[in-house]
Image 1 (cartoon, helix red, strand yellow):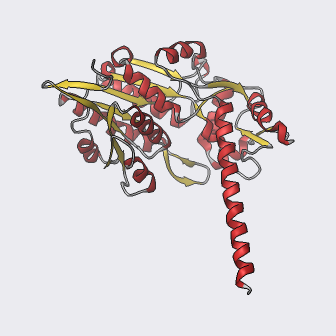
Image 2 (cartoon, helix red, strand yellow; image 1 turned 45 degrees about the vertical axis):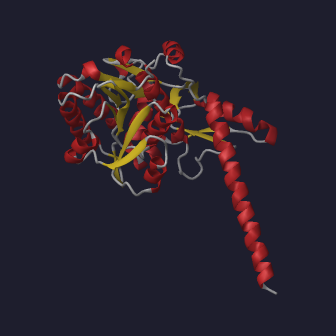
Image 3 (cartoon, rainbow, N blue to C red; image 1 turned 90 degrees about the vertical axis):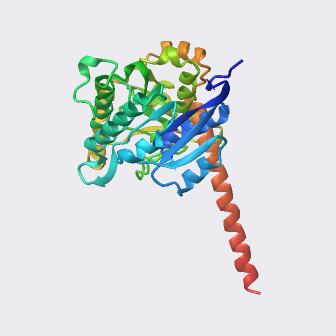
Length: 346
């Protein structure tokens, strides 16, 4: 029996070759690691810097080859996409921080997207590429209240339209994730997530759909298990739908035995728009319209594709466990340094 991801070629069975753009980004890392674990695919991890620590980490995984490629350099994409069966594509709006603008630049992401889709078209017309998975962003729950939408949302939606324009929808699956759990790990003084504080960008009583970034890898793996069914499909994906207060209470239940009281703190909208304007627009959008993932429909699809979504509770538990290990390691290092200082006196 032929395994998922394997292809018969001249009576020889080979594993499908999957190219992952921006492989050292949060999404890219999750996708590469998830596909590597299956041992059913060969993965070409594309990154601008093949010598970075993250690239070296990916290169150490089973069935992973790290290659140089840049979404702003079409020639590098052309080389990286040579001979691949599947492409996972994602883009980023982040480009250098400026006061009153932040780091999000819509035109920067659009240029990446057009380069990406043009090269997908070339790879498809070469005869080997048969599936393209694009990571976009979740559409609005209430389309009538969509505008104004944040620039880093509309850039991805415009890239989706370009996929249609180039007649690539027939081989494309669009995954549209919501906000990441990881975004709660901001560095803003007084609003950093801790056992006492759960920070958010919307009012405490607004429903807010979120997802663990690594779960995008699970969705890619799931879609690849039934590619023909999910080509020419777009799916809004989420893991949780909770209010800010419910998120804070989730953390409260975890740390209550330690005597902590967790409070939900909303980052002032004025401060958000000053530091990262488009995120402020996003916060307005979430309160006005909200992400539109159908949580009941997703449960059915998740069961079909063998996807177990990461709960906020599990994500928080893992984060706290990591923090405790870091703190313990720092404490041991400090004690060792103090012992050395004492010893050096003699």
